[in-house]
Amino acid sequence: MLADDPDAPLIPPIGAIPAPERMFRVNWLASLERSPSGVPLHTPEYVAQQGRGVRIVDLREPHEIVGPLGYIPGSSWVPLDRAPSLLERVGGPFSPIVLVSRGGERASAAAHALEKAGLRMVASLRGGMVAWKALGYGSSRDPEILERRDVLATPPEPEAPREPGPLSRDEIVEHVGDPRGVRWIKLAAILLHGKRSCVDGRDDAGIIGTPGGDAGELVLGLAALEAQLGRPLEPAQVAKLVDRAADALGALYMHTDVHASNELIRAMRADDRLTDAIGSTYEALEWRAWMSAPPVEVRELVLEHMLRHVGCGHLRLMMEHPTDYRIRPTLAPELYAAYIRERWSDSPQLELTVLAGGHREGAVVNVRVEHDLHAFTPIPLISPACEGSQMFVNHPQVSAHLRNEVAAFLCEQGDVLGVAPGQARDLAARMHDLGAHQMGQTLGHLANGLPIYDVTFRADGGVRIEPAGTVGA
Image 1 (cartoon, rainbow, N blue to C red):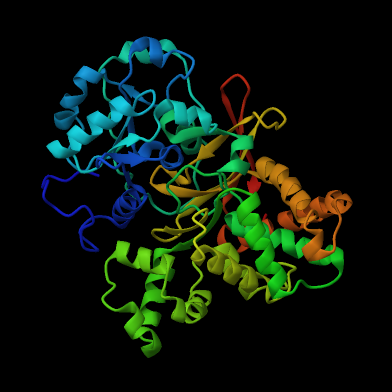
Image 2 (image 1 turned 45 degrees about the vertical axis):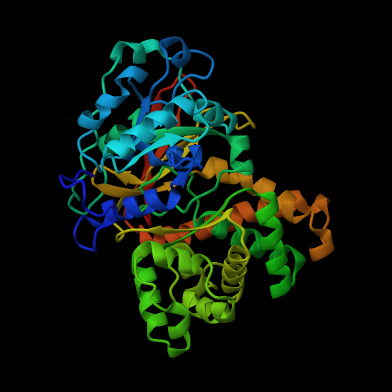
């Protein structure tokens, strides 16, 4: 992610740089916050998801780094008085770097100075290590980092697309064994502010994967609930449940992709009824802002177009083949519409992420931890981008645990649904069975013939990787 011209636009025209790099820059800028004094800041949630895509530089004193707060695994340690040297050492003005201090004050001052000096993609970790730990993200106190004083990690080389084909076990080992590519979050924190992303291999962030992400899990839960009740839910009930889920279940995730987004934009531009509302909207960030809050008078029309251009393969397949997914034909569209309307009502915890590129997955990876799950259990966030290829990332152990929570949540909505908390166990069992079936359907469409690997993070810090068959075999 380097550029020689410091005056070049951060987001250049389409085609000027590789599409994944351009999308990374769009997301960097869209996620960037500014303090009242103009300091560039990124949240712990954003930084935790980036893996190898961003270099993290810790500016604290030695006793702080190996003290109770620890440091972010994969960090470089550069003493604060050496921070100005980063201007000439990071590899260019567009090399992304996040600075870390205890509460963020020292890192903020350094980031502000480096940005003024010419770095275009530098930020401070908002709230520093105090916020990182408070939000449940993992840290290390291994003193080996002190042996690397003022040694800046080499930026990852952009991974050239490899020839299409299955990923080997060795490639999986290399990917999950890199501490820069794996972050950790406590299980309890997922319910408070975390999210479940789609298994989709095009996401270059560290994720907890399940088919369709949180939106797919809500469709699953409501389909299982309808089967248990023996009747369909009304659209108003679906909308009410999405509203309550947004309050109860923390951040919620849905994704689309660049191809679907471009087709959506073309379709809306061709619709004369939207011409005035769209106006001069053109650049990527302008469209992102417009789609986050279209003019009220055209929102239902925009939603009609969005339902014709769904970029999540799992949700789209549900809509196209409802019988195969064992859901009624209108359930997935109803939930999709309710999700988008709730998002438009100023619910920032409902995400709509845009993924870049086409599918190039070479494996399906099931991620587990060795021990039983508890509220305090660290869960690994794994990036699907792997060795110039991609992989479907699925966290079945976490999904099973969280489905129990969703079942309990749904069965406490008696005023909306006419159900009782005592039905949660049966509902969870239905969700587990239907979830396995729906996962099989999606992998059959998108991953047929790919190898499956079971990746288990052991209690001693090691990783066990075992072949687990082939999709469709």
